[in-house]
Length: 177
Image 1 (spheres, rainbow, N blue to C red):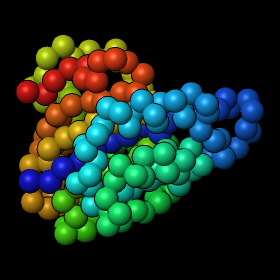
Image 2: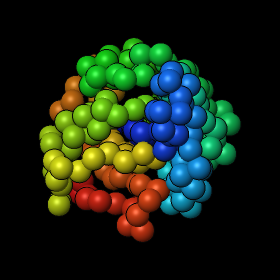
Image 3: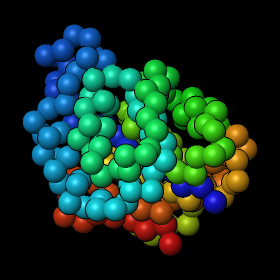
Image 4: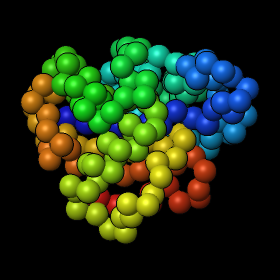
C-alpha cells in the first residue's frame, strides 16, 4: 500500500499587490498557519519520500516552512503542471512517479486540491462530510492508496484518512474510518 498527502499552499498575499500570480508570496497569515501546522502534524510527514511542489513562490515558501518536519532523505521535485492543475492533471502527475516511492506529498492550489479532495472523499466512507467544505490554505489531507503501482492508481483506490488544518483547534473535520 502507498500513501498520499495533499496540501493547499499556505495563505498568500493579495492578488492586487502582485500582478503576476505565480510570484505571490506567502502572507503573514501564512507564516502563522505554518507555526500552527507544525504543532499539529508532529510526525505525520516524517515518512514522506517524495515531495511534488507547485513551482510558484507561495508553494516553495510553504515547503520551506515545513521542511524540518520532513526527512532529509526525501526527494523534492518542483512541477509546473501542479500550478492551477485539474484533478486529471494531478492524477497524471501522480501516475508518472517512480514505483520505488511509497509516500508522496503534493503541495498545490485550489481549485485542484479542493476538487481532488472532494472527489476522493465522495468515494470514501465518511462521517460528517459536507460538499460545502472549502479546502483551506495550509490544509493537509492524508490518504491510503490501495495500489502497488502509482501508474495503476485509480480514484476508487484512494481512501481518505484525515485532514489537518492550521486555523482551527479541531485538526480533523471528519473521519474516513
